Length: 78
Image (cartoon, helix red, strand yellow):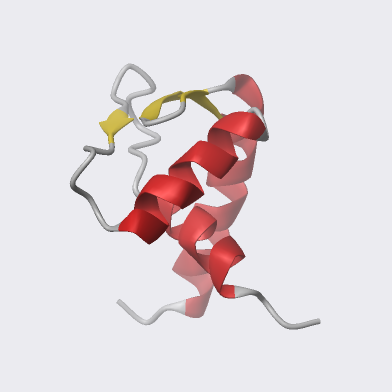
């Protein structure tokens, strides 16, 4: 199974969230990269973020972001 670029963009958005403070969201501005805008909107329609332009993680979004960030920690040498 290959990871499509659209999914990679969504993963990148979820990886940006600060999980130590769930009161901290993100805002994707109208002049951002069109792929970022589209990825954020897809996350909203999937029920992972509270707003079409970012906002806060939903309960499901927190669970998914935790898993993504754990995988990234394991796979990166930073």
